[in-house]
Image (tube, rainbow, N blue to C red):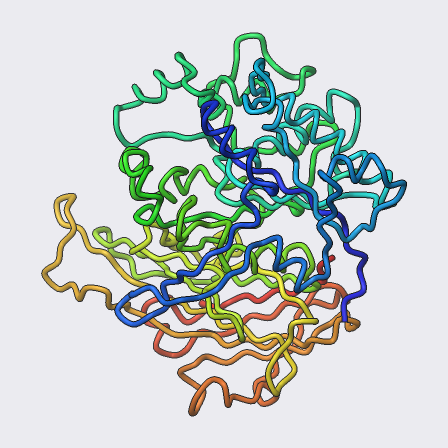
Length: 502
């Protein structure tokens, strides 16, 4: 059982737009994080079924015992109480000062001010809870508010962000800004020049200003090679990338109907507002889920989002899977792709999936060394949540490999079988649930080798050893089924790595 003390959680919401949008946002006591959902796409023929997700706030209250403390407001509660429990949730209400519903002179929203106010809230919570750090959970632009604090505000004050922030989890944050498939860059230039509704915060010039410490910022704006997604690790007080998790949405179709024009402009490789390639910090933990930026199938009000967040914040095992040692057939006219899906026992959702249908397959290149390792899954497990008769944490990694053949620069469908993979199998992995053990008991078996249903599969007969003598690192290479050899080569393996988390 895990015994790590829980840290306070601060939620930071996303972009509200103009004054009317801000006025609507501030009427919600919890800035939208109390919004649940009832639709999930798990029914036959992709028909929506009723599935009740109560909201991230309520689920943390029910599942993890967190408290939402209010006395007229959360600010009043903090002012009138000398101490607060560390297992508490707080909303950073940075838009209140910019709403016209409380004053005739609302202040213009500014990213740096929102980040400075976030620091004030964090220091107050730390001082009254006794917690050394707080976790930050952010949606959309809220992740950029957090990064402004981490990369600019705290370093400019000479403070180490890792000393006061535990982990950062972002839902659909435009870490690389917001770009469009339409307009050949003209839409971005208009947005950044005119600053319509403050949307220039998603352009490179403004992002450079609020993501760069004064000590290293150049007077001429961002260098040509500057990537807003990067969280530099060489500067003083860099925040460890291992403490950052980016949840990436891949469903533009179900973005709110009112934002249909936005979804069309951003393009299909997106969640309807943020393009997939802009939704992550390189080097940070990532998961892809078929959810839209907001709306009925939104990424925040989803079981997929909550389960990834919960395990990242409170899990005690980190499990990685990578494809190594593969050698693809040498064909100049053929490209190879992998699709992956991650399912955990007891959950009615897929925790992570990258498919060509959702515009995010993994592109495979030929190679047989560790340098060519292809990351497939990076997830977290909780011993407290182990289910089933085996008492283990069981998950399934679905792996598909498919080929696309080109002729004269065009896809050739002469011998193509649509939606048919060249290799398709599922690796069933059981990780020991004893949270006190530094080396977990682990077993793995391909579904093609399991007789009968997976649920009746006993893990004990397929236990695998540990190739690494380090007590806090478990490594094993799982050979692929014989059917994969003609495609990926005889040396292709799935490298499983398990390390303690928290």
